[in-house]
Length: 409
Ligand SMILES: *[C@@H]1O[C@H](CO)[C@@H](O)[C@H](O)[C@H]1NC(C)=O
Ligand SMILES: *[C@@H]1O[C@H](CO)[C@@H](O)[C@H](O)[C@H]1NC(C)=O
Ligand SMILES: *[C@@H]1O[C@H](CO)[C@@H](O)[C@H](O)[C@H]1NC(C)=O
Ligand SMILES: *[C@@H]1O[C@H](CO)[C@@H](O)[C@H](O)[C@H]1NC(C)=O
Ligand SMILES: CC(=O)N[C@H]1CO[C@H](CO)[C@@H](O)[C@@H]1O
Image 1: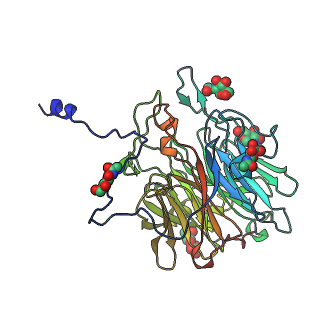
Image 2: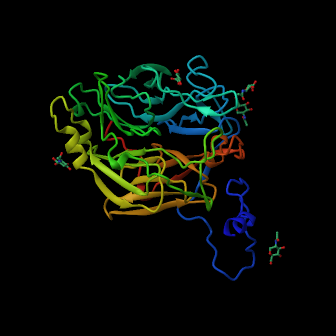
């Protein structure tokens, strides 16, 4: 009898976009306001393409990359509060479903200009005749790291990867830099990239910006793997991924957020679907098996689990005080791991932060956050676009006079 009874029960539609609130005006009960922390200022509105990555330059130029969609460009520069235009030019942008997923700006140093770095995943999403999305494997030479000189607006560096480093099913998701000349023999610095591969071989990719050599560390180490069948809650609703042509599933992303410490000695990271924060000395990521056959084993043995932080985390940022900011899509919040108290602390929470996706700390001491309503995108809702314009960039001041990390330039 039970199954029949259950099928008659009406449960609130889990996929409904409209968030309704009970009427609590005049209640004598305590109410969660949904907010705390520094004032959140609205900085930019997206009325056309939905954003994914963002980066703020030293002169407050603001760049955005976009989610998958039927869009006309993949990288934009804001021209006013409500619009962006193709950057650096229309011809350098590929239309429709191609994307430059991640942006990061490094300050000028004696060896290179202020640089906007792009991670080109080389894995566009293709729609089949039924409109179901698929993501073909990467072709060798497709996935790239691109450096754009922000003074001349020209591409000055392009790096590609061998298939032994970037697997066909790899997916480069985020990037950090240590450009100090001492860090590698080439003197040109190194990029640390996360491979978040949904297909199951996530790990770190390191790139020597002088020689162009690349290598992996911690591939499939437990700290980089997705937590299988993780069900987060967004806006108080359990979330399952409903993609056309694919049975209902849970998010599958592995290693996602990463952040280097201000002295460059340690890398914090975590998978999207994990509640735990991890770190590893960067020396273990930089070590090569060509000079130390035990480099991978040593790295695996030197991972620190900093414990749970109170939810899944998306992108990371970090400031000059050493705080490790983590975007918390389940809580409409940004948390910070404090290496001095060894605890995760609250920074800012607001009901408008509906999926914080990408953060960028400007040299003005603000943290800028992209808000893109990702749980309401068509790819996760059987093809229905349940997002509501506008998307937004909001910003808040960092605590304790924190600012952008510039010591690794
Ligand atoms: C909410 O409750 C207040 C006080 O009980 C009432 O005056 C108001 O009409 C209610 N609003 C709605 C939309 O039902
Ligand atoms: C993409 O947009 C163009 C122009 O708006 C439209 O003609 C085309 O049908 C769209 N394609 C898809 C797959 O939605
Ligand atoms: C913002 O820029 C866009 C694109 O150049 C333009 O169409 C729009 O009118 C501008 N809006 C304002 C308020 O200036
Ligand atoms: C682990 O990292 C520490 C630095 O935090 C380093 O001194 C030590 O040699 C590393 N151990 C291994 C096995 O790599
Ligand atoms: C400006 C720029 O580098 N755009 C790149 C975005 O990604 C596509 C492929 O997805 C590249 O071909 C573009 O060059």
